[in-house]
Image (cartoon, rainbow, N blue to C red; front, side, top):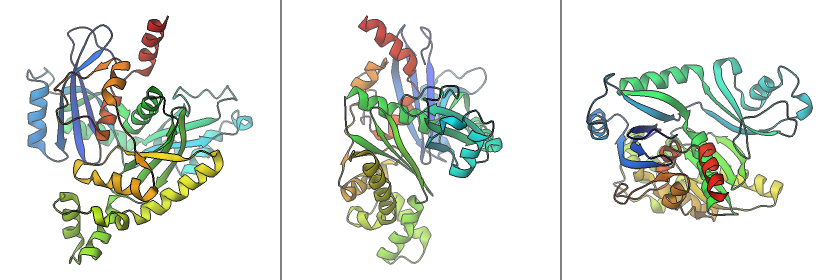
Length: 350
């Protein structure tokens, strides 16, 4: 997204753990990030102060008008291989949603993209059979909009954060000329969205019914705590060093991941060599290392500033004082218009 000169842009990501916010300005060809902010979910005072810093002069509407990325609990982001011969059947795509993903099409907003380049799926082209089904339950869209409005944020554009993030990780791999298959995990409270991607696109996806809450009983048992709530508070507080317990905490999740990776490697002959967890809160960042070590892979080394600059998004010195790590990927992804960026890149090349 590019803004006219002197116009400010606002971006908000609401994930399972926090709200990430940004203000940008624009030149003729680039966005410049002016300020970043982060608030824990439920901390209304911190959010109010963050919005005041981002927008000192309150808008007439009373809201912060922003491009928003959301991660609904029942979001659908799944890869599928279609049967070209059946694309002419009116009910075929609905059947795929129902049989493969147990999704009722009439209760969801569904969009279908090509898995390799993220372009719109065209059912009239039989060569386009590897696709990504993207969807949100209609009632969760309304709930997400209402929740943002209640926080003083008007979503002038609402995006499925996972889709924006995936496109940008793929683009980042291409920018780095990486040939390594990469495992991406969105670890939520109850489930984990797992993806295997390369610089060429999304290769595999899986929804795993294991999340952070599944680790709480392990904490309770291993530390001999009386109740689950005490274990939960300790687990999320980062006041105890859980790194030694990491293999036990991720054991159930690891089993599912190993199954997915093994299937992918047998099917493609390619090895998964690196991992990125894009949605972990800072206090649980150690989980990425625990999972990577257990899987025998490395963490994806991010080089966000040069990549963003290649996509006409500038990060001035001092804006990201704590550095830009994986958890900012989703918010930053909302700023990138890949089509516009590609056009600009092509003009420069010519």
